[in-house]
Length: 111
Image (cartoon, rainbow, N blue to C red; front, side):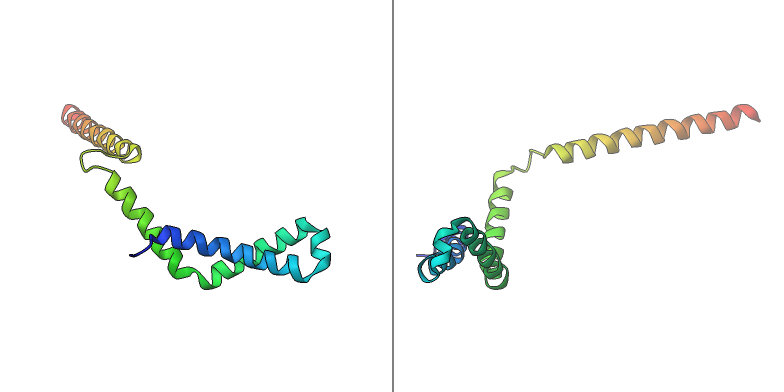
């Protein structure tokens, strides 16, 4: 059974935070008193581990999200950005057709 890439990435990210947090909490007594500093250090360490070692799981999770989004959008339905772009293109085409017609009629009347 293959686990979903999003689940794998999420679990690995949590471990990248929780393991350094537990190590600092257990082995450094000063970190128990400064719990907020421990959390900040654990977050920085987890972020560094994620950037360095979790590139492949991140890529898998990103592609899964993209595929889900593409599957959800139906071919007949366009996004609002695409509809806006189509409306703008149509307005520009109409304006270009109207201005070229008036320019040619102005040229013929001046002759």
